[in-house]
Image (cartoon, rainbow over all chains, first blue to last red; front, side, top):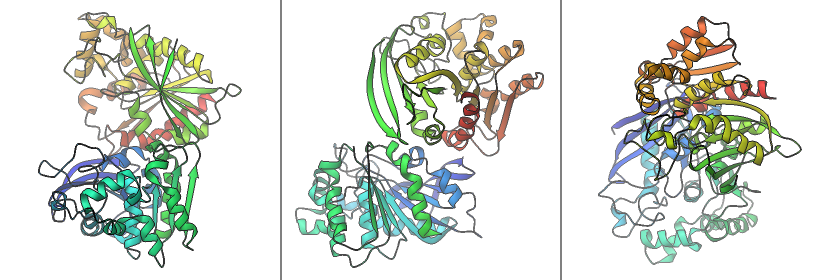
Length: 278
Length: 278
């Protein structure tokens, strides 16, 4: 699979790079970003943290705003940021910021017109890791994290692939998409009216059925403007309370939904993942 | 002077806030951002680092991308980011990214149509610090830093106001604007054809004439795409070499002109300023 380099920036003695490639799974050209710590080499393959961004984001938001590179450089962890949906003029879209391009919700769409390109689940779980593994000096160890829609994606993907990741974390995740406006709108469009099918992508429903789980760390701003209506972290908290999993949910007083919140706690999450990756 | 709050985000236990206000000096409505560390209070006023951004930037670029808040929080330093020019539909502009709105060059314009609003020197040196002092829990101690056009601004303002700041630093500064395309274009428009007047805003010329200077730290990416044609750091290096000032210029191999470079070295600059501010 051909990678085309788009940009290179030295960052904390390592490298931030953007690439585009033809995605077979998504049936379009995709872009991603990777941060490679200075010690990464063919002789010293490093583990990877996959970061899934939220609504409207691209591969750039986390790399530019989270301030993760300093500690990732020290810990020797690569970070990979995919885009949040298929992209392009030929790709179905919607006028809303919460559906279509920039809002793939990390599911495999089954409904027209979305199913032609919107297969983000397979892209993040299969195609992208294979691409990264084949083209960069990374080991097979990986963890996953994300924010908001990407927090949903990270937790949901970890629950469906418990042996693929060493650990999972999330900031302000959409924890129960089948019961919030963002999730209902997207799942209706991508998956259709049969709500029983939605459960296969719902963190709360998946966790209820899970027999075991990997270490999980969740950070939630207590003053997040989307907390009550969209994120439903209390629903996830109730499921977690009934299980004996290693899931830590922290409410952070005063913090909102922005990258200022993510930046304030990203080092804690990197340390958490490093403990399980290295 | 009335301040209107635009946004508030908790950040590393402190607060990032944006405000708008009517600027008498600039004759328009202006926006700025301030980071207040958690320990700032009327009983514990904190020193301020003023950050001047580069071409096309607003108050947001540094706050979102530099990753400065973590250490500023720990050191107890406030950071103030003004916009890079007057703004508004009634404010003169140019189709180029390097003249007009987003490109004020921190000078007081004397030429039509620019002189009506483009008085960024007086705004940064006088009006904004008075506003900050009157409305926030900050001490009278201040330092100044900036990037590219803002690196020019920081060094030039420090040279013209040696007693107003404790220290100055710059990333990739336009070091000799009277001898580079960006500077010649802007100074011709804002200051007119008489090049003898340009020298009053040129870091190299000001430093040649200076009898003393404050501690200064300059970071320059050795792979900066603008180094040779626009930044002219070698001209500044030659002036510095002939003086006995406390000026450190560091060339950083592999780094470019981006915020990935700034983020990689901002903590070093914050530590430098803290040594002189606290």
